[in-house]
Image (cartoon, rainbow, N blue to C red; front, side):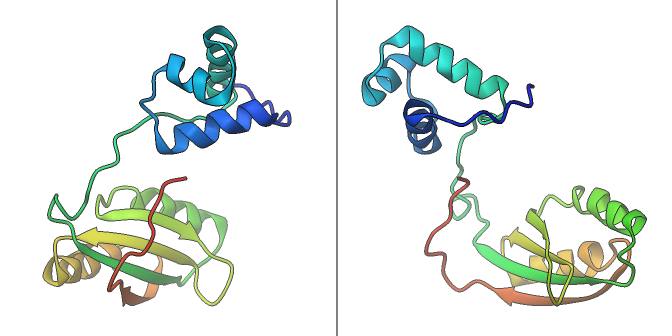
Length: 154
């Protein structure tokens, strides 16, 4: 992967905007939508992938249909915020499949986790046995989502 941070032009941005919502779009249709022919569109697409603007393609699953309707946001405060402690927490949190997102926060707590489970009982078990046992966790606060208005992966 290159480290090119060259500015994106109008067509590059159009490619990214279309693919963000329709990642399985054939190159011919993508070219039609952005107003270029297939070859230059394909060249731009490969360049955007190589430069890391497009990190991959994936299916977006419906968590509710999969039985994972319970969403909780967890504030995590650490007892130690030196680099070694942060790295230990970062590595360990990646092992918990129910943690859908993990963000280091500048503010009154250290991390914000998005946790998805089947229900409150499953969440309580994940919190008690997995999240609270992560390295250097001093305390947590949970906020349960009542409804998701908008959710996207960019």
